[in-house]
Length: 250
Image (cartoon, rainbow, N blue to C red; front, side):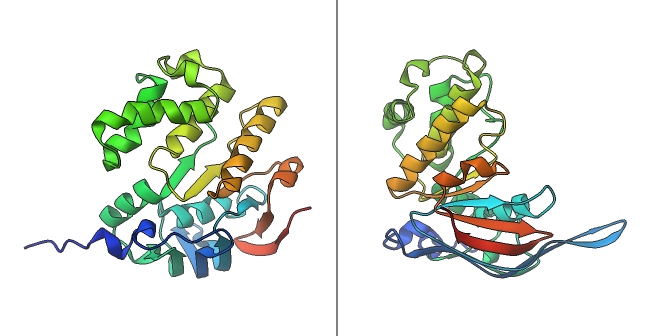
């Protein structure tokens, strides 16, 4: 049997002119995610409608178990909805198979985790270059130079040839942000990126995210830290899988 190869232009955000700041980039339509367990069906998300414009810095907030991580997994294609539609740029994420999702995600979404998840046996620069290796987005001869430029951008260029264990928590999170930027994705998704950092370091990391949004990146961040609200253009509040508030922050 011959496998059909779907051209990337059918589902990559970059296939068309990227949305300008203020234009719709992400849209969820009636997204429901149900899980089955011993106690029966559990609705992690229930008929969620949501829009995010290009260049926004959006917070996803809510108590533990409210559906924050599930929502982020829908946006990034890590998980697929039980029903509903997930649209990102020109891509219908809910309709892609796993191979297509991997290609789409590698070039269109940068993900930053709470615990950094840098590979311990690679140098910081090698960690940054790894997404470029996987997606072949830049010629091999250009990847180290790009990694160094990104480390300069996040303020830790001098750490390029150290192992992650030799860096502070704040430096590791900056390295993780640089890695998320490796393939120049239009969207950054961060899951509790300041949850493992002290207050001063958290402020510095938030300022970095805010500067990236100001440059045109769309940033979606899961957080429970309401004192960071001043950095966001909008906060989306979840409770029991339902959006209960969606408005501009002051």
